[in-house]
Image 1 (spheres, rainbow, N blue to C red):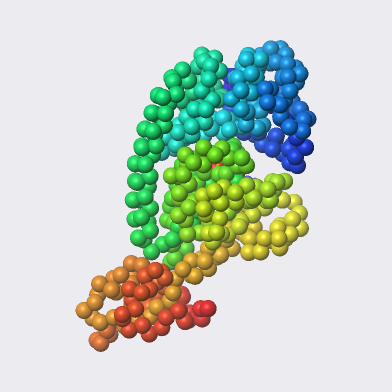
Image 2: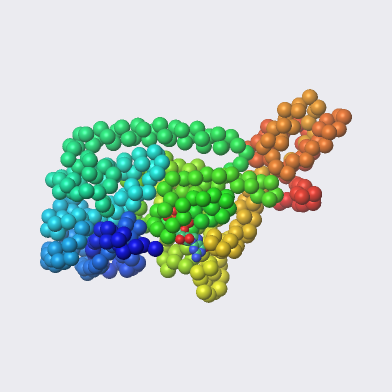
Length: 436
Ligand SMILES: Nc1nc2c(ncn2[C@@H]2O[C@H](COP(=O)(O)OP(=O)(O)OP(=O)(O)O)[C@@H](O)[C@H]2O)c(=O)[nH]1
Ligand SMILES: [Mg+2]
């Protein structure tokens, strides 16, 4: 529970939205408030201006801007947060009129990321995104910010770099990019050692707060931070998950997506998001209880497209079914999205079905082989054991009989041997089964 003292320490701010008549304005505005709260702010007022399009100098029109300036003075607010991105000029005009920090959606998201970044990679990426965003906005406006002592929108390079000229920022961007290249190499080495393993990687993706880390923890018995906050997870975590039948899969929990995810952020986080790009399977989690769940799917798909990962095999998972009162909604969603799976990562309901589905998918990546290997090729028997699962061996004087499930990419290396059966039948838990 938050104590009153903590409440007092929070920065107070006003939300300002421009309602251009687009659908879902209200929800996007609510999401902005959630973001502000996630960043540690306290929202004391929400102001909506209806205009068909923003005005160039003041975004919401000069009259409205003056009204807000009055409120800022009266209530001593420390920031005014806008629901869209502001141009550098709008930002400068508004902050000199309000006499406090003026933030837009992108800056806020960057700020949350800066608060959450824990690893060196995460910190480098967010710093790069902030500097890229800052560069075109580097005007006199920032001198007033540099006097602020921390707080929303000023973390990271804000306080220290603002008075530094463009050239030095560009140098820093260059350096960060180089450091990130190094990080990328390390990640690449880690990933290629995983790729040499016979087990594929599945990546949990989804809108922020969908429950990815909750499901990850449940399945892998891990303790990744779970919070009812936007962007709780920034750094990817990977664990090897073993099914009861013996198959395994690398499971990766990663950063959540959001609508209008700042472009620089996606660019800077490419090293992290490469996990998504390189994954063999995506598990797309959706909060079924969210009124805009379908929009969230679209937003996630947009980011996946930006990453070139939209065409990957994907299992759509409706999470948080424990929060849904009517079974009708769940049934409808499954009909609308054939093949999707309803679960509750919190209670574990439905997770068995999800695992079964992943297991079925894993099978499609493997083939059942049965071979007779000459006795002097024990190395191949060892390889069969290393890459296969459900492997059975029978030593006979004229050769070694082995059978089991082999990844498709390894099948050709066994082909020179006497393949007795290839993809037709398999032994599983002692039962012979026909495989399509
Ligand atoms: N009722 C209910 N709550 C859930 C369920 N799954 C997750 N939550 C809650 O939803 C909130 C967000 O969960 P996380 O697992 O942190 O979500 P995430 O997708 O990892 O979020 P980011 O890392 O921010 O992208 C937490 O408060 C969880 O306890 C569920 O099945 N039912
Ligand atoms: Mg998470």
